[in-house]
Length: 423
Image (cartoon, rainbow, N blue to C red; front, side, top):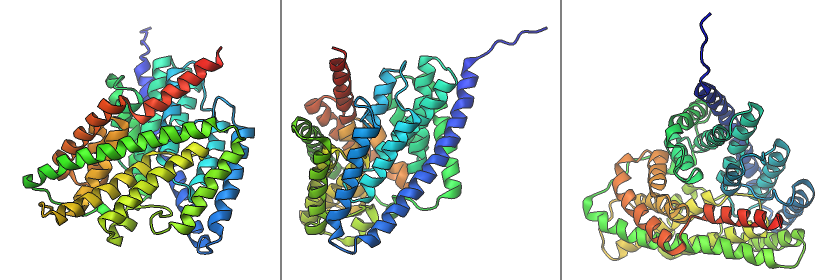
């Protein structure tokens, strides 16, 4: 009888296919539930005094979840927490019950008007899918890491409808450029998830950019300027996030009080700063409003501050999509300044796209992922060259000044905390 040698790669490929299917379905459900929540609360918030009531109630529930349902060492939620499990691969941290409680916290954070994003949580959710399937399949450590990456890529591709970006995000950021030999396995999960999403979902977060934008070489200098300007915004974003969190950590008050402080600040912004702080900020709202450059810069700065307060005070959400929103506003504002100074601008929306890419490249130190992300999401492949120029400049300046991405900085904090708990 002929003996057939078992090849573990086939098992991992098969499980990657399963992860892609599961993450695609989860992405669709997650997006639909979030969209329903936003639609419902947009109507509820027409009663303006609820701008204070709803964030406070949500903050109390989130505080209860953090204090009573989550372990002290398992409070994080997002990219850095997934990276943390990848570092501690022998211990499964993304167990279903904890992830479910964090998803509830995310839902309450976002629909209440706090400044956070759904992409960080969906990364965590995808990592949890890959982690649980890997541990139940008794895979080796490196195979488990790869399957976690498959889950992240599957959910990101499902949310953004972008398999190439999702795969690059995992390899370039999550794996710190390791496991390039497994890129086809990760891409498999991303593509399977994208296929499912494209069958059942027609709406896109980037629907406002679905037209053809132009670029001429005479505009190249504009993209160089944009790269330098966006490095300032991305560095300010990272510094603001880190130091606001440190301020709240060092406050000698209970966690639920920190949540309440954050809720009251958000309520104040929703009520008094509605001109500059937009509930459920989606690109189409900004693109159709025709704001001035000054107005757009203020919106970007307010978003940086309120996102920092949301995350620092204990809100459960991501920093990814607020970062894209900030980059879009700053890019649009800069294009309007170019027009004031009679610099060549064929289309201002081109700079909104480049602003998003550069902002992400700056705080993630990932120029290639940043550029490919927006051209894939918006189908503007003709803009890849100028956007690569701006993302490279932004990421290099950020790297020189802050040395590492916000995700790796947060991972360092988690590792230091873990080291401190061991002594």
